[in-house]
Image (cartoon, rainbow over all chains, first blue to last red; front, side, top):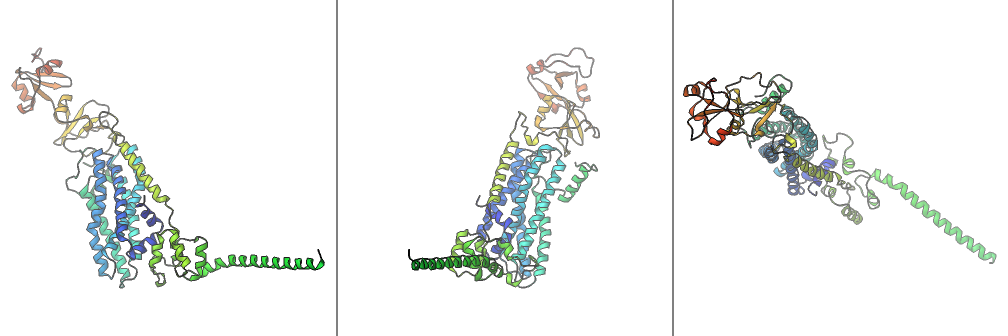
Length: 229
Length: 282
């Protein structure tokens, strides 16, 4: 329960939280708490997603969803750090990582808050494409709220520095777009998370196609235009 | 009592009354002055006497928020202060002690967040974990769980090996090489390596748009008999000769060896081709 108090601080007193990151106060402790809580919440949400297919899929998704977010963070962290440095930021890599961890923790908390809704639809509907799109919607909303925390936190943490405030702000928003692309491709690489009903359990599915084409096809099928084969 | 004593007593009472009135007035003035002090000072020592007496009415975030442009461009006067930041997560007793020291010029720290969100989050996570376990517990011998109990009226990914059954029809079909093929017996179904959990129940008419290929039969013989039979449903059908065997599209590799007792236990169906009299028993 002590680890969860950091989430309360982020949600209720975010300014003070970001000020602490700005000052580099207890960064290690913060990052540890953020990683633990976000991994736990992602794992729970992943288990809900995979339950629509089988127990093995539930366990697999519980392991893969935290991996998806943490791997995306690892891939994208250097870009944000070096671009910020380039535009006069005086933040350390640790501060950048703490901010990004805050982003994914907020995302994980929101996903957890959606989990009862998703479970309800899991138990009461049976359309795979609908369930998949529902999850895409939930991830989009949670992700957008998460990155707004990053933008807000970055404004506080990078306040001052050697000029280039506007440029750094643009860098953050460009980085957020990059983060979304990397995240969606990472999700496609680590799929399946829900598990198609006609397919046996697979830890990873063969590469091929892409995330966006699949989503468009799913929308098409729900609307009755195409059948996903 | 003499008049002189009464007069002295009166004087003493008046003095006492004046003193009490003065003290009451002084306290009232102090009470009235304190909110003014709070408004006047956001950083100064004027606020300090308040700190020890009653909790701050606002959170730190509210107290520090500049009047305009909050969160967009931070004015220089709003620069964060180390100790204040530290205090945000420190217990209230710490800030009180520092306030009593009389050397802390910082604004009052926020009251620590009430822990009910963290508690609720913990309970939600725990409840969800229990729910996930509950909906994944199989409740029948086919391994059906609550999470997978809904019939498969959903989009299936059509690929080789997909096994489907229309809701109101008994036949089971398997998708192979771009077409659905009927599996003619349960034994053939099992011989193909499938279990009931692999079967996806689909809506009636689901198969209509698809090409239907030749059915999958189980071709069997036993060691002690030269005859070859085809299992369809619960019957065995004798294949009268090699020509009929090949004409039906079978190859020798399709033949499975079973026990003669099992073959004898099956009722006879029509011969292949039909009209060749009663079939021989294995």
